[in-house]
Image (cartoon, rainbow, N blue to C red; front, side, top):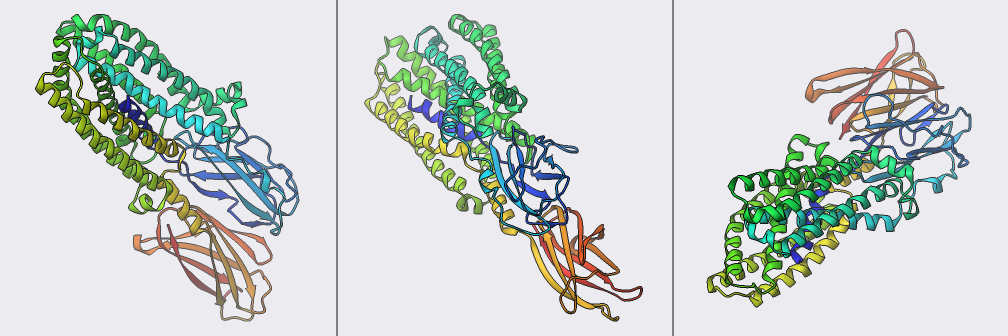
Length: 558
């Protein structure tokens, strides 16, 4: 049973090979000062996101909610969210609080401010979305881990019976393990359906059966996947009955059909995780989706089969015939297990790269450090499993109708290590993946770029300074705010201000950006920066019909 617990831990880690959504930009930009309240607030994320109730809320400086209460996906695609604001003239700092559900079903939240007229103190800090119920988060992690473990127990047992131990289907042990896996997967899937609502909305257990929360879950890819899983489990229940009665005496043709049907059910059930997680979207989905499926199926086949074998060897065989059947099962299972380990190494390496992204994130993020600890624990499980395998072969060589005492000790060791793996997995389920954690840190570190440059058009009154602010100075939508000042310091209007962007290393540009006059001496340009690199920002100031000059700012964009 230690191996079955290990399956829960390892598969839970595999199933969360995903990345939380990262906020790329906001409109208005963070910390921007606007002349009037905007009609709408928009946020753009690095992937598609879902909108739970109260996904976006906007508060004025007095803490009064001023949004229209209808968050939506404006435009094309689901990576941008927006909400309208009611008309108003209150000046000061506004707070935008957001909470959305990323493609991997995990909620992400945050808050930022912008100002109208001038920055001010705000009373809306306490209105930001709560982080959610800790109890719900823990239960959600446990339920998901149980789901992966029961998947391994169910279909790993089926695979072991089909390919290694057909006679075991007529006994009690293996069918009981498969039935327990089936029941646990059924209950954990229902629990996930109920828990996802309060988990995504940040509410408590009291809302677990809230119809609106369940309806929201059903509208997510996860909801459709869970319904499909429940339907597949219904078909699997019928299949298990047929397997137990037909497999022991089945001929070659009947076994082939049992394998085809069993493989189809296993593949379909595994896909309910892959299709509702980040394997189906984001970075390289064409590779990630089949890799995730292969990882889940190889894990279930290996660990589920080892679990059945370990359980069978913990009791005394009823006779020489059963002993020979188990010995033959071990012989058949050995190359299958070796192939599964190879698949796990290949797909696990790819998933780790996709999830962590860099050596820096592996060592520099909480997720990466926890993953390193989990890798050590998994390596320990593999080492103990190797000792167990050797003990099994020694028992087979001696033809002793009973389990080796050393084998029993190694199984207990596996169970102890599996407990550690499960604890680490429970943390990983809700942790921010290394790739997105690092991206978020870089985004926060990048922040707006500010500069002050002198200009001189050469004509009368043609000298002064330009206060420049580029936000967020990353790829995607950017806002460039310019305050023109005269030689003595006060803001002043000029005849014309032009803004252009160039990327010399790609021979791109100049790209002229539209400029709007925001107030005395205040100008704003907006546009897309499509590529990272060392950009050149050119500002052309014209103070009369003939007097103008161009000043340049080097801009590093990540």
